Every structure is written in structure tokens, then in C-alpha cells.
Amino acid sequence: MTSGIEALSTATVVRISRGTFDTSQFAQIEQMSRQTSEYLMPAIRPLAGLVAYFAGVSPSGSMVNVSLWDSMEHADQMSRLPEMVVRARADFEPFGMSFIPIVNYPIGWRLP
View 1 (cartoon, rainbow, N blue to C red):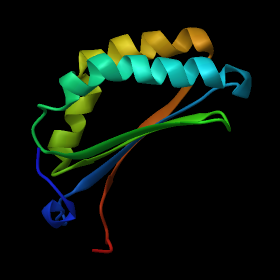
View 2 (view 1 turned 90 degrees about the vertical axis):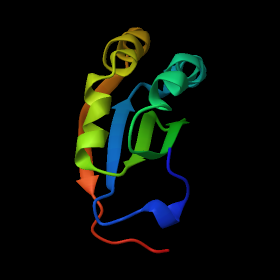
View 3 (view 1 turned 90 degrees about the horizontal axis):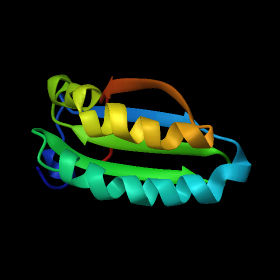
């Protein structure tokens, strides 16, 4: 994994994965997010091109995973990662999680 903002280039890609849920499910979704991190972090960490990865759950009924990758090709690895595509999705759906289509954004500009 590359470290720090100095690693970002014009080829860097921001990958945004979002889901929404009923706010009454916040505690369960937050707990499930922590539990899924136990198998997602070891699966994501060794992927080529990973710059950084962040995950968060909001009491407003939204969950987000934001990651930075050194290229579009490397960002696309996530769409084939079984731990994310199959297992994590199956873990969240019983709690009413609705996933929004994932988007990869090439970085147009940044602040240092």
C-alpha cells in the first residue's frame, strides 16, 4: 500500500460505495460494519494500488466506503472481491440496506 497524499497523481481514482438504511437500524448496521471489517480489511489491504480506505456509518441512515486507488484498473478490483461483492452485501441486506451503484471518480484536482 502506498502511503500519504504525496502518492496521489492525476491517475488516482476515488471509489465511492454507498448504502442507505432505515435510521432505526443504525445500531445494527454500525455493529455489522465493525464485524465485516474483520474479514474485509485483510482482503482489501493486499490489493495492488490501494492508497487509502475509509468506511463510516451515519445515524442519518447512510453508510459509505471511500477508497483511493492509483488507477482505474486497481479500483475495479473491488468489484470482483468476493468478500465485498458476496459476503458483505449478504451481511447487510437483512437489515434493510439498499446499495447505491458504485462510482469510480478520476481525480480532477486536489489540495495538498
